Figure 1 (spheres, helix red, strand yellow):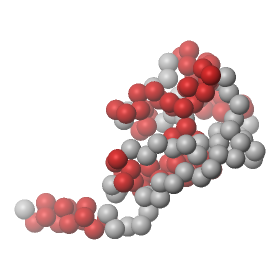
Figure 2 (cartoon, one colour):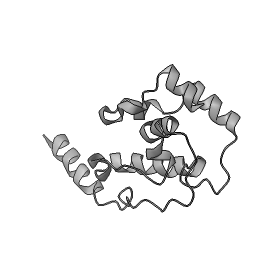
Figure 3 (cartoon, one colour):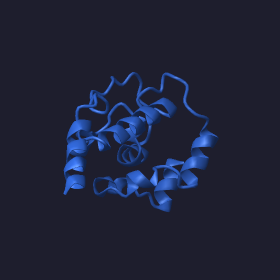
Figure 4 (cartoon, one colour):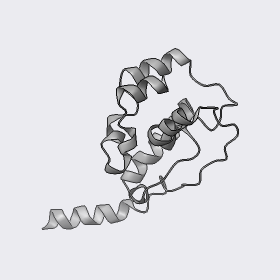
Length: 129
């Protein structure tokens, strides 16, 4: 009983950590120019972490999930950002290797029920590449 009470108390306390709840998306400075089909794939599978148009589901307001989501979005935007095409982006061959190898979108993102669009089939990967 004490362990359960301690765990519940810890869950409550970590809600006061001021990280992972700043869900204001920065402005789009220059969007990547994509054809409609590719744009749809990017919107469903990539944009939450790799653009300034992130959708923030309810659980991104609850620690520790909020911490992981914020960290993934910050890291994703830093590496590749479809909303800031006016700054340097990774080399195309790097992106091809990552998508073709199944490293993106990451498994932890694909398994979430509200991210079914991130489960890319071979045709979608080919189009994205």
